[in-house]
Image (cartoon, rainbow, N blue to C red; front, side):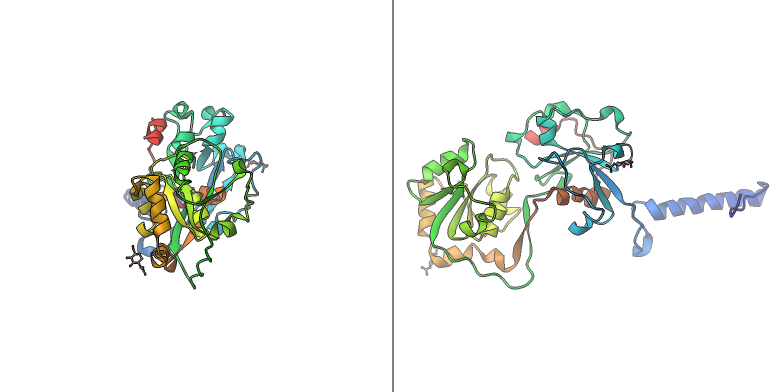
Length: 342
Ligand SMILES: *[C@@H]1O[C@H](CO)[C@@H](O)[C@H](O)[C@H]1NC(C)=O
Ligand SMILES: *[C@@H]1O[C@H](CO)[C@@H](O)[C@H](O)[C@H]1NC(C)=O
């Protein structure tokens, strides 16, 4: 046997060296894979994790996934793939709910390697999520916008600003809203507001579509943006708040989860919450009666922060690797429906 000296006889010394060898191996194991990582702050060697994405969300063809995909989002040693041949050796498999729901997709349960973590991923609200009761005892981790998710992926966040604060766009109009299809509480609230507040409504439903690049410059001219969510659930705060309002430079008037939920994400004086008013009329009077210094105070956050939008599924899936060492190993969502609809 080349390179390894194997003791010929297990005399007392031989036995001792065997123990020593085992101890050394054990120490080595602790060193490389132990929970504390390498002692003394030396970086533990990292193995590249393979995340298999079973269906690419909302797409029949996945984007190109070059090997440095996650590095570009600041996550090292993480490989995303949609190659299902990797099922047998992927470190985690992620299933996006929409495709499970609409295509009634079959899960590869029979081929699942023992102990392989499966991730359920969705950024839709519970009101627009069906069929969860099919997945009892299947998933180990949840990727969603909810703060109590295993992999928490909000639609956006504030991050410290570096560099100068851009000037606030000049305002010539009062309030804008992009209406999306559906008859929900937001439509009802809009109807109650409209007699008291000049609101310009954009969107396909109103024959006033806004192209993707037109949204920000259009909303920028308004003092307020009606960031009404399609349904009201804990932490369900979408791009309507982060992008359409904050990034555009309009004060968000929010209809969504309670104020406390918004305050977990953004300063309390960065938005107007509809729940703070007894009626639509009162809300309209407040918005119209606001003087300039009061209005400007809603933008104080801009001195310290900028909005980071998180809207790319590649970035969201790379977050699985970033969280991987901290995720619970023996967890199973026996009642995913109960958890999500809670
Ligand atoms: C998928 O992975 C298998 C196994 O590693 C490999 O042989 C195959 O070429 C891959 N397919 C594609 C399309 O990359
Ligand atoms: C603006 O409104 C705020 C709040 O109502 C008030 O405290 C402040 O004095 C007003 N400023 C001016 C210049 O009118």
